[in-house]
Length: 433
Ligand SMILES: NC(=O)c1ccc[n+]([C@@H]2O[C@H](COP(=O)([O-])OP(=O)(O)OC[C@H]3O[C@@H](n4cnc5c(N)ncnc54)[C@H](O)[C@@H]3O)[C@@H](O)[C@H]2O)c1
Image (tube, rainbow, N blue to C red):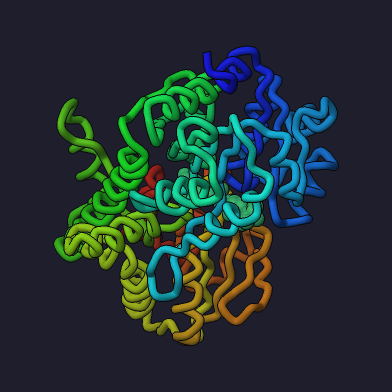
């Protein structure tokens, strides 16, 4: 049996997780809880410090678990890549954002490869988990490692395994979400599957690195396109005076061939708005111009403007303008029950309303403050009965489950509900998207 495989089977393999964010930290803690020695590397000193003192900064990672693995010395957080000398397996989970030009920014992956290069040794497995275009793992990792003289699939094994974590999801976590794995060659896949099957219940093997990279892009493009479709239908239904939410819920009773997606103020997070653009960019290299991705991106990224336009119409009915109106945004995080602000459409709506001269406040149980486009700190408003009454309109943008919907419904002059969060209330002051 291969030396590395033997170490994995005997639970003697040590793991390095690079990038301790929403993806990397849950995985690092899961392995540590299962008895593996995990070296966690992040460039941010404050994250490493927090972990060392037993604190968690990721909503899905329990503080008690961090405390436990730090105390047992099974999770060793560090900013120093020299620890790579001691590890058998490296899992990379660094950001893959877009540049201003909307091209993929793979510099984080390249930086990781450059930082760990001199510490690499034989009998290692390197897995990339960051979402990216097909060809990245081969070109930016495997080829670079071959350039320094290692024999691939013999000295060092390479794989790609997309991360599917859904922050805030109470049902699916690292352990029970099936994991797709594709290696450079058969042996690489086998070793990568072996390490993942130690902590994940269901492993799905694919044939190549590129298949595994493409799986993630299909999943997220599927979501982006379907959200785009339902957002367009919501705009149409609004014009036709049909309740889109009732339509979707009734359609969802079909037991086959239909999957409900819901409209909203736009898409956010580090995945859905970005990942399809990685695919569209790569396809252009093959002279293929993707139409579905461009179209859904267009519809979804125009939703904040549609919402602001609707707010203008609603105020107008009460002889008011957006300019000078007092507006409260309910929810600034990009989705329900999490604190993630990345690409949140609420931020865009905040900016557009401010540009039109509105007085805009926000409240969000998960986000105590945010930094606006002018680099100023905006602090959330504390919700009280009397403060609710002072707003000309309240816009529900994130349907957090711990909002006091009754209090808002009973006291608001007008509510524009973009998430069907007020579905239980048949009040005339509540207008649905
Ligand atoms: N957040 C999600 O829900 C999610 C889901 C599936 C896939 N992904 C993908 O996973 C990847 C990571 O996303 P995330 O949400 O965890 O990002 P994140 O920003 O939460 O975490 C990334 C971490 O990497 C660190 N980092 C950056 N450069 C580094 C370097 N050179 N060396 C060491 N650490 C470095 C950052 O400081 C940060 O802590 C992305 O490609 C993303 O598309 C994210």
